[in-house]
Amino acid sequence: MKRAFTAIIFIATGLLAAQPPASAAQQQQQQRKKPAQPAPSRRALPPAKPVARDGEAEARLIEVYRLVGQAQGREALAKAAALVKDHPNFQLAQLVYGDLLTAQGRPLRTLGDVPDSAARAAAAALAELREESQMRLKALRERPPANAIPSQFLTLSPRNKHAIAVDASRSRLYLFENSPAGLKLIADYYISVGKLGIEKSVEGDLRTPLGVYFITSNLDPKTLKDFYGSGALPINYPNPYDLRRGKTGGGIWLHGTPSSQFSRPPKATDGCVALANPDLERIISTVEVRTTPVVIAPQLRWVPPQSVKADGKPFEDVLQAWRSAKSSGDINRALSFYTADFNSYGKSLADWTPTLRGEVDRARGHDIALKDLSYLRWTDGADTMVVTFGEVLDGARSGPTKRQYWMRQGNQWKIFFEGVIG
Image (tube, rainbow, N blue to C red; front, side, top):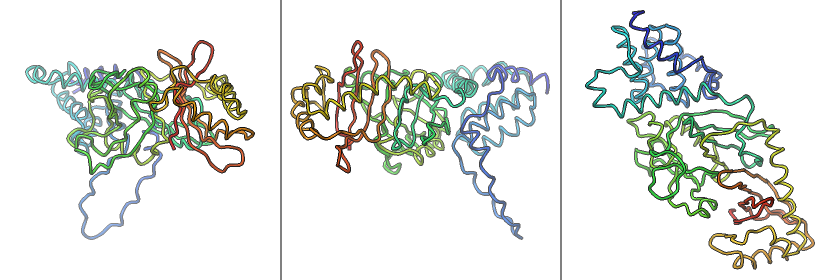
């Protein structure tokens, strides 16, 4: 048994490098209280079917890897058997279980050590499962620094109760809770992106878009095909910045997986972000429609919260200068903050100027307050800001909710889109 097990120990330890700290999802599972045991009865009831919880299946798979790395073969085999019994559609777990069974008779050559004829027939599927294994372990090994947040989240308002960030390089989605104390990472999950990767540009290119988006709705799973699993959360691709750059397409969702498939390969969708159904269900039950930002990045840059506030201060000064200009009643001063190619739902700057003039005239002599202000930064070919706020005149109880897109042009920030969203 020891000789046969040598290869799989090497595979597991090589992938893990070192035992990674538990993910946020795993930590949450460990903190949950065990359910109370039912009182004994004369006739035993049949065992209840296990309820799949978010992150639970992945945590159990990683535990199997750890046991393998510690040369605890029998324990690993037992846990793998229980895992595939509870999640028979978890193909990666099935593959690992098969390897553990094979390792009882001979050394393993690779992860997914099936007969050569079967390996040739299922070469693509095996490669995808191996990549999924590597991506799960990479994300769990390379954990975000403690208390750090993605650099895009400069300022979130109390209305943004949660936020989502996707790191395509790690096939990982990070879920945050926003409180008066700031953003806190509460869970993270393995995800799949487009078949041809990221940087979506045109309809049907099988790529996942990159940028700052918002969840626009929560689709009823009863109206969806089984292919989408437990539900779907559409995002607002293409956003105004995408449209400015001529990007096309649509129908980009965060959605689940078919009932026959616990998870999909790292690159498997037509451009959406796909999660295991228990993970998606957690997200659906947690986040809010319209106010939850979703950042999708090639690779997230994690920074201390205090540095984010410092980075955002110069832009906030410009935003307050725009507010002051509009409050002053000076239309020309206010217009100086807009790009020449400004667009608002199809209206050019000339077409939209009468709207701005009316708002400036109403504001004359009344200070404008920016309530529930949030702004998120996106930098690729240009430096942009996505700004959301309630515009409330002094003395008024409420006002329209607006979203602006700003772009840095040289040393100046300019608005290239503005619109009412609520």
